[in-house]
Image 1 (cartoon, rainbow, N blue to C red):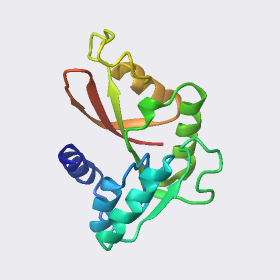
Image 2 (image 1 turned 135 degrees about the vertical axis):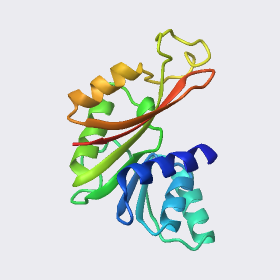
Image 3 (image 1 turned 120 degrees about the vertical axis):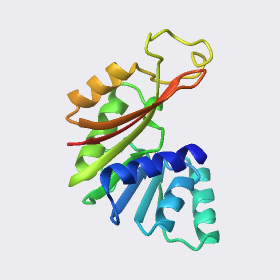
Length: 180
C-alpha cells in the first residue's frame, strides 16, 4: 500500500481533485478504494473475483466507509451503463488483458469518464531496452515498452498528460494520467 500512497499523492497533486466520483477497475480487496473513500470521495470498485469483492466489502464495513463494490469484468460492454466518473483508476489490471479485452477495457474507460475526467493507468512495462525478462515470462501478462503503451493509449483516443516510472528488478512500473 505504501507505493499506492505515493501514487495517490501524485494523482491528487496533478489533477487537483478535491471531491468527485471515482471508479477503480481491478479493485482487488479494496485497499485503494477504501483509502479514497476515507478521503471523502464517492467510490465504486469493480473486480472479477467474488472473493476479493467479499473481502473488500468486509474491510470497508470494518472501516465504516460506504463504497459500492461490484463483481464483474472490466471488459463487459455494459459495465456500469449510464454512469460517469471524474477519475477512473486502473488497479493494475491492464497488463493482465490481451487483444480484444484491452480494446473493451479502453472503450469502457472512455464511455465512463466524465468530460473533464482523468484516467489513471498503472501498468508493468519493460525496461527501456525492451528485453524480455525471464522472471516475468512464465506469467501471462501483456507487458509493453513505455513507448508502445503510450502509442496504444494515443491510438485509443487518450492524451497522456503526466507520467511516473518506477524501476524494479523484474520490470518497470508505469503510472500515467490521461484524458480524452
